[in-house]
Image (cartoon, rainbow, N blue to C red; front, top):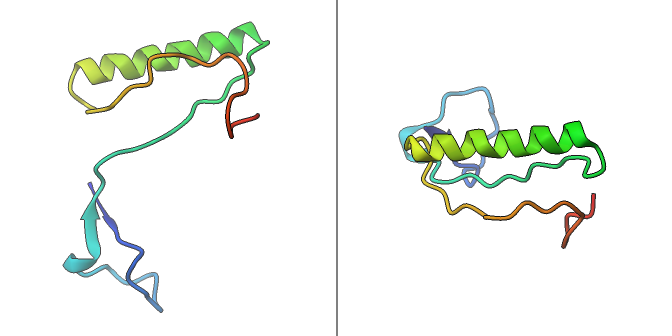
Length: 79
């Protein structure tokens, strides 16, 4: 997938980007937030994790997975 590189200043955001303005997305980073005191919310978060792990096994992602699930606020993610 190619996206527009925002390093290029543009006065017209509606125009199609030039080839040299495109770059490939190489990785994603995301956090799944859930209510740790809510059983349904925890189950949904774990189920999402399992689905992502299955996609990894099928070759859809090439991740560096974080092996644990935090069930309490941690670090800068205090929500």
